[in-house]
Structure formats: structure tokens, C-alpha cells
Length: 205
Figure: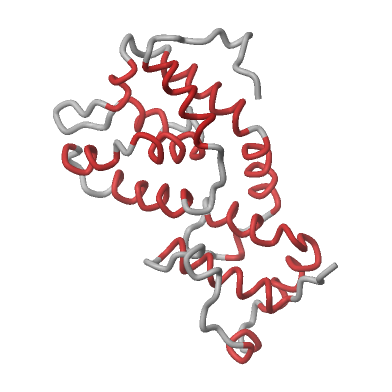
């Protein structure tokens, strides 16, 4: 088994920090950056990365992703296990949570497409539910990836602060979240066709 070293954890942290705060793509560059051990050793918080490496080992990347979702700027003083455990719980139950979230959404409208409709430049129903934390960030990422409604929202939503900042967050996270597109497409096709499944008789995983 390969032992995770403190400097390795630091490199992952710096790559993800760049991913969430710049045009750097973690996947495209394989998490490689130009950080050096010299720059690492100069950091006053370097012992933090040693603790993370020892505790999370091969889950170091996941630990950092879960915390960057909460604090995109990467202030490690606010990074904690609660954020990681909450994220892991959501991801491990991704399919179930998605269906739960879709239940919440479709029960608010008569027409599936109404969820995405921008009226008078205001936030659509889907975005309002996301901002109010009634649905998860993972559900938003999946929907945006499959339906690409963000392009229409860019043109029609009038405010230029809230939506653009959240779109960036969703895009950044979307590059790191793994999910079975065919499975979620099947659920959405059923919804679009008006097949609102019974929450007690869910599509099998």
C-alpha cells in the first residue's frame, strides 16, 4: 500500500484550490501543478497536511473536495470532518437522494419544463430550490450536466452575481463528481414523459 505523505496531500490541496478558483482543470492536468517542496516547507500550516494525510490516506482528495464545496477559497482553518462526512453520505446515496430531490421538484409544478423556465428575468423554480438548500448540489450538477439549461439561464436571468457564482461552483464540482449518466437520463425521460414514479416504488439501483 502506498503511504500518503504530507507533501502529496499538499499537492492535491493546491491542485483542487486552483480547480475551484481559476481556469485550471484538475482532471485535464491529472492534479499536477508547479508547487514545490520548498514552498510547502515555508508554510506555517504545513502540519495540517500531515494530519490529513495520516487520517484520510487514499480519501485525501475526497476530504478536500468536500471542504472546497463549503469554502471555495480553501481556508484550511475551516476544513473539517463534518463537511467530509456530510459529503460522503450524499455521494454514497446519490441515486436515492436524486430521486428524493426530484420528488420535491416535480410536486411543485404541473409541467416538468416549468422547473427551468426563467420568467421576467427572475430565478427559475429549480434554482430557487437549490439556493434554499431544498435539493442537493449533486442534483443540480447532474441536471445541469444532462440538460444544459445553464446556457439559457445565462441569457435570461437578469442578476449577475448569485447565478454566475453558483454556476462556476457547479461547473467546478461537476468535473469531479462521477455518476452514471444513462441511469439519470432514464429517470429524466420518465419525468419528461409524465411518469411521476411512486416514491415507495423506486426505480431499481
